[in-house]
Length: 266
Length: 177
Image (cartoon, rainbow over all chains, first blue to last red; front, side, top):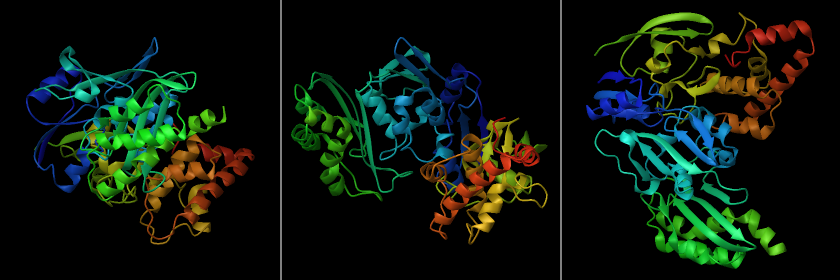
């Protein structure tokens, strides 16, 4: 039986409540489902809904997104993320689910965490600590207060999610990347993959293949195949590990489809 | 276990009731307020049968701890019709045979109301996205999508006539507060 739902009214009060025990909840899309169906059947819940952690600001090209900002709100503030956010669940979930909560959902969910890894995001925690998103481990009594990342320049942001259905389905493979080019050749690349390992991963193998080369079919196929070295896929209801490994290069290539044709025409 | 007093405006009417810790908005609507339109389906946000509007936006009522929306505005299917007079979305569902067993219908209609309040002239693709969180096991969706597009047309035509347009504004539950 849930004995209390606390709603601390500041980040500090939230951290204090968390240190005292209890399960943290942001949008409720994961925790409430567990309350409803049994896995969470005791103790206190701590809702961050009133902790003042929602909102998006963009200053000097850097976006700061409060931990309890919903995906519906985020899409309104940062249009470059709209195509990625449209692949997350359904509109009625995106009105609840939060950016901070997404960091803690198990793969193959957590597509936005893949975006944050590709954006080289920094996570802000209570107490003033900061950490790169890929190294996020909560200390005792810590909660995420915000994520921060540089808004990518036009033409440098790429996202593709392969699903069983066109909308509202968990990932078979998710690819997010920031890729800068000088002329046709890649001068910087940061590639993140979801649903192909127990955690969101970066793929240095794919990045190394891309560097110094154009985004043509041959290079993209080679990079997608190289990415297999970085993955540790799993079986679930959406796809087998075998299938995820098999189709990763295809979806890797499709992530860059728009520029691929442009590169090959020029 | 300390229950707390929660106040909500539901379909324009102020309601006050007791809620257990972490009680869902869906449980409050059904068990406290006797509003049975929103259905208890999967209880984990996957089926959409409990879709209602909070502050004009569609949400899965099973996932919202009701204490967190204290003082909020909630719209359910019960508030859509004007007495016996159905609104355009309901009438289009009825005329277009967009409901079979009916279990998904309250959620489908509320998702549609939210869409049309925001976007009175949606494309088919936008309709599909708007109901992508709502599962229907009977119809195959085509009749539902057609009904929502039909409802948009009916509103557009109704908007041309002053009396109808007043009615439409008064009864559109998805309007932003």
